[in-house]
Structure formats: C-alpha cells, structure tokens
Image (cartoon, rainbow, N blue to C red):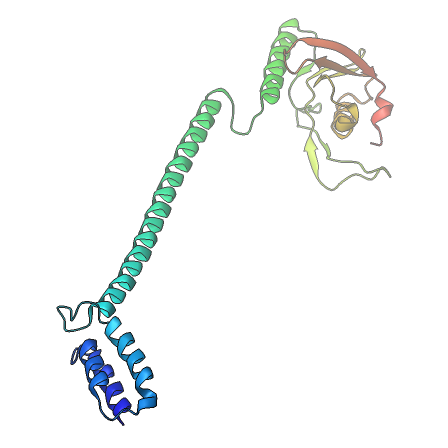
Length: 255
C-alpha cells in the first residue's frame, strides 16, 4: 500500500502537485517498509531524487523532467528548421529552374525569329537554294526564247490545263487522282525535250512518277512523246551548275 500511495503521488507530480525529492523523502522515512525492502527503497529514493535535479521549475514540475522536455522541444525545433530550410531550398531551386527554362525558351524563340527573316517557316537552306536556282534558270530560259514553256503547266491546243494521273502502279494502272504537270522547261518538236532541274546526289528514281506525268502531258499537248528527258544538275550548297544527264522517255513509262 505504501508503494502504491507513493506511485500515485509520483503520478500526480507530473501535474506539479509534488516534487520528486518530497516523494523520495517520504519513501525513506516510512516505517512500514520491511528490512528486506530497505535497500530497494533506498535505490528507488535515489532514482526519484536524482531525477529531481535542483528542485521545481517555474511551472511546478521537476527540473530534470523539464530539461528532458526542453531537449525534446529543441529536437523538434531543429527538425522544423531543417524542414523549413529544405522547403526554402526546393522553392529556390524551382524558381531558378523556371527562370533558366524561360531564358532558354526566349533564346530559342529569338533564333526562330531570325530564321524566319531569311527563310520561309519549315524551309531548309537547301530548299531555299533550290528555289533560287529554279527562279534564276527560269529567268534565263525565258530571256533566251528557246523554250515553248518555262515553269508553267502544260496546256492543250485550246489552252486548257492538262491533267494526268498522279501515279501509275507497276502494272501500269493509273490512280484515280489527277493533277497538272509543270516541268521546268519544254522544247517541243522537233527537239522534243523536257528539261528539269535537280540537285546533285538526288536519285532519279525518286522523281520517276513526276517525270512520267511530264511525259504524259507533253504527249497530249503535241500529239507525240518527247525524245529526251534532260536533267540539269546543280550544287545545292553553292547553286552552281553540276552537269547534264539525258534519259530515254521509255525509262519512265512504268515507275
């Protein structure tokens, strides 16, 4: 019972009702403790009074426990400080990343704007050079007066634009879709030549369907097939002429 009472007093001490050293004092002065329990009582009293530190704190609690509580609060504050520093660091890194991405986007947009000043959107330098060469050659051919048509759709005798099948399959069957034929230049009979400008290195196989359309439209226009397909090659980087290739029109009948 004595131990039970002291235990209750110790529990109440957490609420500030009694200091630990008072509990220890009562424990040692108790005459109800048997001799064989004296040593245990002394140990308990020592432990209890040892936890008391130097007396009560300002809130009535023992300094030892207050010190422990303060230690826990310090740990909590350190954890909060670390969490706050982590959040601040992450926020700072996020802002820096957004600013960097914004600068990169602005630089990219600036490069695109400069590119637009010199090229049509989506147009490569090779494509731009090709257009310039086609225009230059067309101007020279028109001035020469040696060509029936220069870079324009082929027309029949009534002046109607001729349309031919867009594609012919390997069995010679035409597609349902038709379109006009616009070779770079044509010299009708008796020369019978179709002239087309192509960059160096481009395989003629890539243009067989196009050339076949030229041949079909030429045949409708003049009532006979052409005699030669002339490919004028140019350097796509410098724009300089790079040789002439001559093909038999029969090579393009069935692509």
